[in-house]
Image (tube, rainbow, N blue to C red; front, side, top):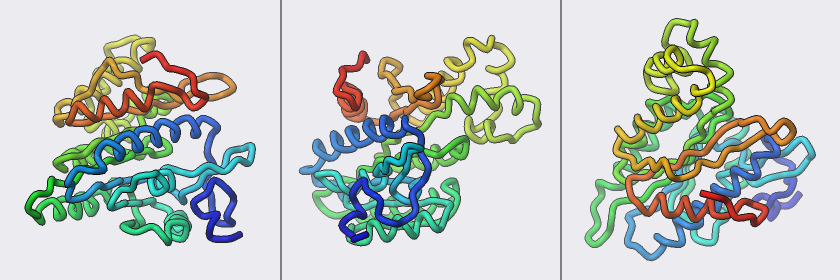
Length: 284
């Protein structure tokens, strides 16, 4: 295989991550949102435009049918307009080695190996240092974080840490199926459990105890959004969060939540959701 395959959705001989067929839909919305954001902000005097992907993987995924997909980090580096800096981390060193090789010709990339919930402290320190280096006529940096674990690995503390950066939009994986599956078991355990870490406390336990199962999802999403608003984010209940479903059983798997502290973030997300990847208009 040749290096020109590295940034293409083709097999290049490097490791790939197994992904579900629904992953293409998720990545479709991510790519549209990032493109909307960069197109709108490209001519502004930002100190930096940063993309943070704390669960980056190797950069490519492979479905059970054998199709190779560009993962979120490679989608970000191959957009028409570019970020000035990229922060890619993964707990799997082999994945980061593969991603580093694929992005070898891309400027401004920093790589980290480790737990995303620990790496986030280093990433935010770097971005905050960039913002402190004042240059006349420039704005502080604009940042987008894609938080896309495979399950319940994302901790609330990580979301809270990122929120401390002045301009930080986040696209967050909300594991609906995982929460529904684990809630009954974790409720019986003493805190802290993975759901306590995910929600940043034990409030979810009160929700679980006081509402019937048919209301559990909506109540827990409401709790999560309320906590995001307490961090200063505008969380618009009118914006539809795309729901990824199992293709065979149509069972709900997870949602994507976009949070921004500026109205433009919601506007870009609405535009990104206007059509699905088959070109069909979505009802928002």
